[in-house]
Image 1 (cartoon, rainbow, N blue to C red):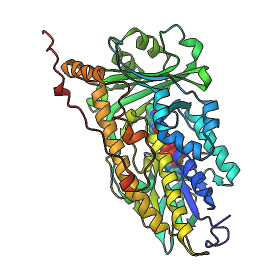
Image 2: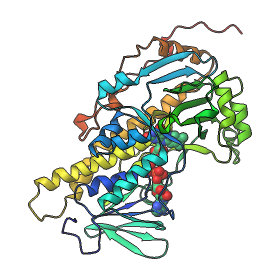
Image 3: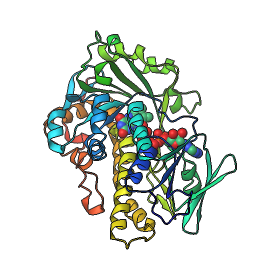
Length: 427
Ligand SMILES: Cc1cc2nc3c(=O)[nH]c(=O)nc-3n(C[C@H](O)[C@H](O)[C@H](O)COP(=O)(O)OP(=O)(O)OC[C@H]3O[C@@H](n4cnc5c(N)ncnc54)[C@H](O)[C@@H]3O)c2cc1C
């Protein structure tokens, strides 16, 4: 079905990028009766990487899409999220994920990135999304009543709306905003290995465990029904800090985790060593919509990964845009052209501020994880004092996705490190 107002052969919406953001948005819009074409540069649709954590603000949307059961069948619903000190392995704080599910109505779960991507890919195929590959977009332009994209092979595609979901290194972002990704000097190593390989390492197979330590952290959780075990090792690269280009190599990985607790030390040798991910984000921006070209997902708001909300925000973006489209379409006279300007304004009005909060909190959260010395003692004291059932730090992000600014919950109030009285270590 199309809106009936676009010329034959032309889609209602072009989505550039077939990552989790692009596919989930294409699916959300197709569910509203729109004809969507996805242009992906890669020869095949797929995802590289390991696990993804998906919080209730995402599983709520998966449920609405009828995709949550499939996600649960492919993923794992852990029992707890436990934060430990990476040096002495002592517990700092935890979330009881069963209780958290009761509070927010939907589970906190983990899933292999390629499985979540596959769920959206199959949903798009079933819904009739036009999924094209080998389509590299090199330029964007607004036109009368819509926008066009220019492809590397010289072709031009146009639609009433173009959504740029082309990731951290977005061409649309470069053309429309012109800013640069910001390097954090941190690098991530990943590994998803058979559970057999870690069973004697002291791992907690039913939990998400995050070990936080000076200039490093280490994440562990089971995947694929417990058959696999996911690990992420993240550290600050001394060579990046020194301004050198060849940073984040495996020798730096081994050196960064020296002195860590036993479980972490046993986990580090299992990390994939043939690829690593340098951690970049971007400063938040206020304008994501330029005429009929809209930035979405990492193209609009790439975060550092410490809140585990990057893919979730992309999925929320598509849901919010589709909801506003549907609301305006329902109110419009039969046969009227979609009110894309209204839907895009409503999308931008609510998503920019929410994602700014997540991006800035992710930066602060990462800094807190990686402190050393007295600050580490203060952080540990504050975290240990937290009641495991105090949700004041999660309500603003795990609750229902806001559709309008007035639905956006209050932020939490940060606790200053200096409020924790700890003894200075003897020199
Ligand atoms: C170590 C790590 C751990 C993370 N953990 C989590 C987590 O637990 N939970 C979570 O929610 N998020 C997490 N994230 C963040 C999450 O991975 C990203 O935010 C999310 O994948 C962004 O999706 P996207 O679709 O916007 O962009 P991308 O996944 O980058 O997809 C962009 C797509 O666009 C295509 N493309 C790019 N340029 C062009 C072009 N010119 N023409 C056509 N196609 C193009 C690309 O090939 C790609 O398919 C993590 C990130 C990292 C690095």
